[in-house]
Amino acid sequence: MTTSDTQSTADRQYTSDAQPTSDAQPVRPASRREKSLLTTVLPLVVVLAISILVGITLGPAPVPLPETVRYLAAAVTGGTIDAADASGYSIIWQVRTPRVLLAAVVGAGLSVVGVAIQATVRNALADPFILGVSSGASVGASAVVSFGLFAGLGVYALSTAALLGALGASALVYLAARGKSGLTPLRLVLTGVALAYGFQSMMSAIVFFAPFSDSARTVLFWLMGSLGSATWSGLPLAAATVVLATVLLLWNSRALDVLALGDETAAGLGMDATAVRKKLFLLTAIVTGCLVAVSGAVGFVGLVIPHLVRLLVGANHRRVLTIAPLIGAIFLVWVDLASRTLFAPRELPLGVITALIGVPVFIVLLRRRGYLFGGR
Image (cartoon, rainbow, N blue to C red; front, side):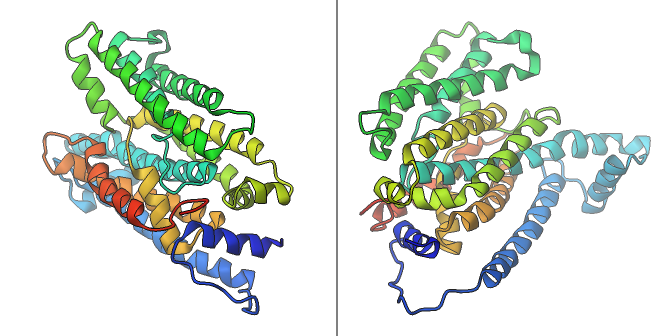
């Protein structure tokens, strides 16, 4: 089986409405495919830049666009501002800019993780929550909020606990799902769903035994997703993790295409599907842990965005992994803007808005025949 045959088969496997193709149909030159991808990426980059600027400008206390641009230019170039503008400058540069940039990073990261997990389990309805990774990270973070765990690490306590929780959950899911035939997609999904309920029970117990009465409200709000605590110090680690994960997945995009065809096909092409699945599982656990630490458990982004991207550009993972981070970043920037402006001065958790969008899409996916990796 040639590479082009593998790619064509993968496209038919991901989508239910793919039309049969003739063997005599000529293959598009690679240069045309590159040009087509570029014409999709460039407008999305422009839309993302505009979205970030709008997100920084608008808020409970809107700042005029010219003033926002002037404050940003002064911060980037090291310019000076008048003392009368100190309050507006602080709002724009110290509060909104890191928050909006973090929203873009989290949206991009969750989209990339969603693509990787869906390829790992060969199921278009999978995301970090289904495998229990997000729930495990939330257990660690909840322990920090409720009991002050890892307090000696200061601002890195939450990130450390969430990452350890994600890795611990991944290890438990892996050990419980592994059988004599290796790590099969079906066992992985079923085990992840079951353990996710267990991790949620642990979170409930943590909140119940928390020594402070306001811990329950704090944990609940954080578990539904929030960027209210975004700072410049927390942005570099999350951004570096997402960029590195995206590069690694793009580098192995052909392996993801083969993995989506099934373990037997992968073995016939000389690829160890179990080994690849282990690496992907570890990578998604690390990225999910970092993202949950800075934003809480934001649901449905990792489910909705990969599906929409496949509808736009097909199932080839190189194209999907190029477009998904951009659309995911744009999506969460606008979700965050809505969360802090719709009911200002109160802030709506991100998970509420993403669920209002994600639940209908999830139902449509369930009713869409054949949109499952590996069968109908």
